[in-house]
View 1 (cartoon, one colour):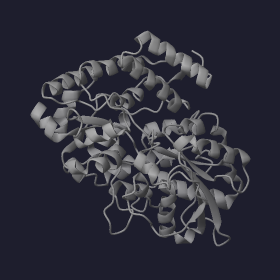
View 2 (cartoon, rainbow, N blue to C red):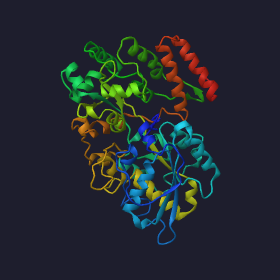
View 3 (cartoon, rainbow, N blue to C red):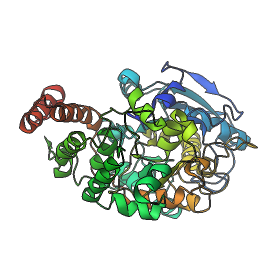
View 4 (cartoon, rainbow, N blue to C red):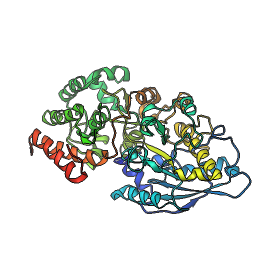
Length: 479
């Protein structure tokens, strides 16, 4: 997930998630068994499991009865490294060891180090590596995509993907020219996350089925709701960033079309929607990932805030952590437009295909993480918050709809609502066909120009012109 998440970037993913990674230092340590830290430390800790039926060949040990197989694993948080501990606990006979390297995305440290390690090759090269939504296309479809093995070559078939009910947008993002190279274990389809007490005061009900018709479908209904909330003294969102991810990831095209910068009409409309929010006092004019944003989650901002747009990780690891006293006063409903935000994808180095024992070991682990739908699979533990035996951990959404269909998504934080009732369809509405490998950088430039415009520092035309010239100057992408 980013930390943008960063996260979900995500991130990339979130400040607390990255903090769990040991301050972004490079960490070359072998993970050993034991199911370590409980699911409280950000999204990293709330998952892991194993696939009893599943990997490409069949169960047993990765390297047979021969020499232990060592897998070099690279990640930007400790999330996947912790999964290896659960995997080894469940499958001690698979004769595998993981050598985990964790480098934070802070200061853009992870990608250059990963790129160099992949290019250098050799025994120390990553065998399995992670990429988050903010930069995953670079590794699945872009400049570094040739280093990734196809899932088919690992023995992980399209039929396995279909049988697991994997969210389509995650497949699109993980594929190049129809060839699957990466899958995630999370699903990050978005919902509108709102305060029940404010809903009752403004709309007379907190029923998600009623609230979705108050705020949507479409942005016209959303702004009608914003006016109703304003009359009651409420802000509909905290800042313009709260609607950006829904707009960005529901656009028809990405930032680059035919090699040139392109501004999708839905993304250009963000200029007008952001200004409308500010000029009408419909938000508290905060920026996401700031103290003012967190204060609005607690209800401590200038105006009480009705809601936020986001996936399950925003509930579990951001709102829940910053506003624990509001637990039970939240619910989720269908947003005005479908979108996703964040996520982590898992890739294998194509060099593992040269060694049959390593290929099998890598395939077994990736299958357990991304495709296993059994109660021994990672995603079942993740969805039900049961990674640590005997403890109730954080429940989260997963890539497999099959797993979520047989899991309990009820959250006390949401007043007992089953979040899977909203997030499973949300994953179907999301699209992964409007991303580019430069999104993180271009998004930052775009949002800065939008804020310059809404603050009255630039005209609309000047903000667009400055956006185009900055992208050209900094990224070499013409318009």
